[in-house]
Structures are given as structure tokens and as C-alpha cells.
Amino acid sequence: MAGTWHSRRRRTAASGLGLAAVIFCLVFPSLGSPCLLAARDEPTIEELKAKVDNASAGERPPLCIQIAERQLNTADKFYLAGDSEKGHAALADVTAYAEIARGAAIQSHKHEKQAEIAIRKMTRKLSDMKHQLAREDQEPVQNAIEQLERIRDELLAAMFEKGNKK
Image (cartoon, rainbow, N blue to C red; front, side, top):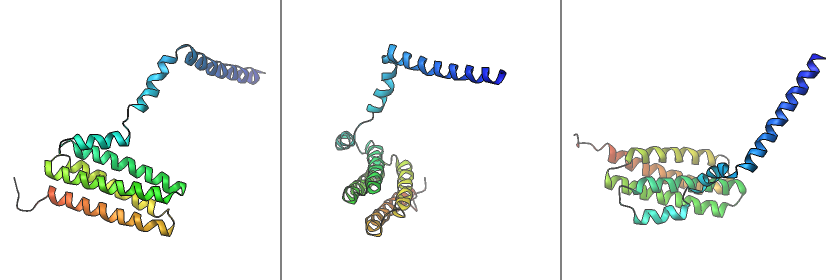
């Protein structure tokens, strides 16, 4: 009999907590809204692209890397959904904005290391993606991998120039 009493007590307590949570959310809806607003605070890709156009060379690399990373996630979603045309377009943005980030980082001598690390991670993610795709979708991904590796090599060369010891 003792076991039955405990199990009933647990069920009652658990359902009471669920009911209390629902009542709390209904009574205090404004406390839940900051969580919903936090997701919207992140700028859209179009807003980031507009910021890049107006940013100085020192401010461009992190913006471009953010665009490239988000477009890489978008490309991955498109490929998983079977929409390879949109995936190819998103991949073109990945390489284009990685290229802009490289140029701005080298020009300003800022964010070179962060850009190199981010591009290395994107290259790794693309390699993982490539192995999950159909053969006809692998070629554009391989081209993007090669472009990102070239961009990364150029960043490394700029970071570790020979004969420029300080």
C-alpha cells in the first residue's frame, strides 16, 4: 500500500507543477516575451549584407564571416531538403563573403586569425556535407571547399609573412 501512495503523490505533484507552469505563463505573459524577442534581435542576412556595404575594412571581416556561416547553414538545409539549386546559390554566397572577409582582414590587419579559424570550420563542415550528397551535387561543394582552402592559405600567408619579423 505504501508504494501506491507514493506513486499517486508523485503523479499529483508532477501534474500540479505542469498546471502551475501553464497558469504562470498565462498570468505573466510579459516575462516570456523577452525570450521570444531575443531570437528576433539577430539581424537577417539582408541586413548584414547592407551593413557590410557601409562598414569599414576593420569591421567587415566579422560581418562577412557571419554571413558566410549562416549561408552555409542555409545551403545545408537546402541540400537536405533536395533543393540543390538554392543550395548552390547559398554556396556562392559562402565563398563570395569568405573572399570579402579575407580581403578586408588582410587590408586592415584585423580579425585575420578569427577569419582563418571560421573558414577552416566552414571547410570542415562542407567536407562533411559533401559525403552526404548525391554525386551530381558533390562537384559544386568540392569547388567551394577548394576556394575556401585557397582563401585560408592566403590568410595564413598574410599572417605569417617571411622576412617581416617584428
